Length: 302
Image (cartoon, rainbow, N blue to C red; front, side, top):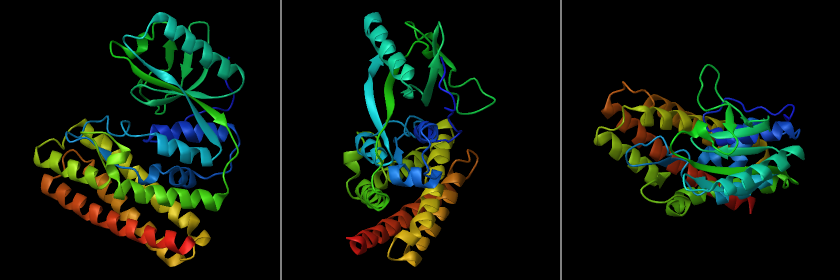
């Protein structure tokens, strides 16, 4: 069986790709900038001190999942599984996922990437491949053995259940408060040694000084977080008319656009390290200015 019209777009932030696919499947009217912004993902930045490519996946998802609920998608956790998970545990999970799919509810998994589970055949689950022209991540997961994951299994399964969306203005205010919280209480949103937002910028700069900026991790972090800031800019342009200060919202959008361009440059493996450090310092300062402006907007909306 296969869920018709369930597709995952090629976003770098694959959680947002899975969410966008489920929202489209359910016929949601929200734009992609609104999905990134109202979910809070547009404001996230999480960095490992060694610029590990795991950084875009290893953070505290619970507050964001609550914001995603405001968009009309309830994320129902189906469990975390690893190499020591028994065959019986896997079979129980597979039965639950098939039941959700049979009832028309999309599911997704996170192993190396977030992937929608679009259906199943006699041998296993059908999984979305976000990017064309590559075999990664896998397009199939064999029942029982999960051999496509290789020797290292660390996978989470979730169902994407339809729910009632929150009032749009309330959703916007909740996302702005989350953006502020990421910066004012970064330790609550990830675990060591990762760092969120201001701590993330510090980790990123430290990695560059330690000569760890030129590999895959530096490139991937630049690609993911640049995309998020570009969508943060588009989000503020979209919601500007809903806020009391249109000019301030557009100014915030302009700042996030510059940050996005900076981080995209930092993804360049060949870029001089001193240039990267300068770009990150500029981005961190601009983010702080954005957060101060967002705090002002929240006060005006109260």
